Image 1 (cartoon, rainbow, N blue to C red):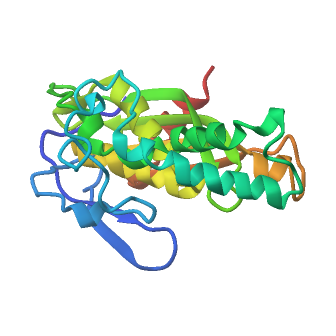
Image 2 (tube, rainbow, N blue to C red):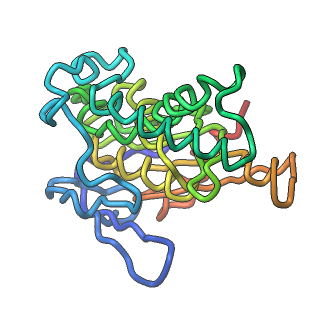
Length: 266
């Protein structure tokens, strides 16, 4: 494996849409990187990120155990209060389809569907600071860290049908490491929203960048989209692969190759 020098410099991230670039930090040749500069919140923005995720300081969340014990389900009053209105909307949808929402099999369907949708999108109520929860550790480790095959479930924002797959994340520490389970939690908070796979890939990479300011971050997602399986072209065996490479993973082909080999080895 390649080593990382003790000094760090700035990384540069491209938005992939045009010739413009977003300055985060740009690596010098072969992993000479330093993240001494402060990363601004706006520098790490990706479309689709809520401006004001609900936290323990938000009205109605003062006693929400979710913000103190990440192992608990998130059931704050602010989300529970959305169920009646959402249920009415689902009931109207059933009627519009020509169904009788009062028949036995559908009687409780609107409420069930509302609760399910709130669970599918619970990531809107979580923030990076909430899930990291101080699980960042000073460690003199400068070799690649990879967590692969993290299960992911999300909702296509175009058709409101699921897509699912696996996420692999790699990063090169710069004197700081992140608790391994937090990488899976980062996937969870961004996937449990209305999403595009392309955006989701970038959001995960940026979140890891913000959390531990590494020499580089790599994320690969392989997903199956039900909007291509159940409707439209109906290609049941198709898979979509997206990647985001930041820092040395983008600039150093050997580092990128090492990560991809680790991800693809079974």
